[in-house]
Length: 191
Image 1: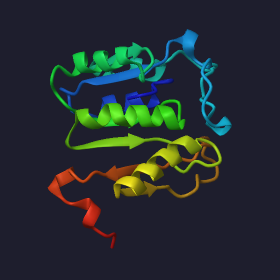
Image 2 (image 1 turned 90 degrees about the horizontal axis):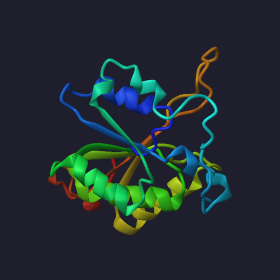
Image 3 (image 1 turned 90 degrees about the vertical axis):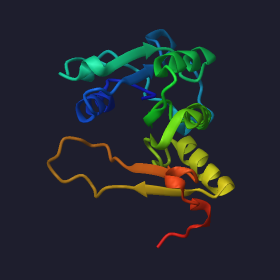
Image 4 (image 1 turned 180 degrees about the horizontal axis):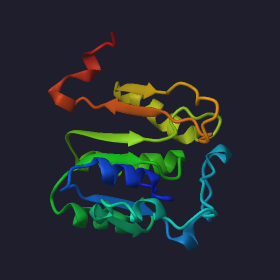
């Protein structure tokens, strides 16, 4: 998971994954949060830790032992080495990109994950089509879908019911890569 923040996504992954799953989650060190400038003013990251420390939510989970948390820039060469050391020659079955939400970070993390993803593996991102904020995520994936002929799927659930405390709208998005299930997705057309 790229972008641990409070660890809500990590907690779900730990509790819903097989017992032998290993999860690596990465977030910037506290002293580096909020110092970078995003390419778009609308992509300002949620970087102020005003609620709780990074990773708090998953640490009390009964499945928290599956997690290794690192605090570094996931776009750095040092993290690529850390990731490869963690994988020990294995591949990634599921990658969640939920980091800075700008174009450059989204691109770097997708390109870091892609050659390490297992056949049939999934790379999922958060905040696609969340406009006018996070335009960089939307721009990057729309661009690669167009230039590489990939199919994108975006699911946005119904509005949040009245009385529910959660105020943020969620959505899911994924790309079917041509290699997935050995099917030529570039030649396919949606039904």
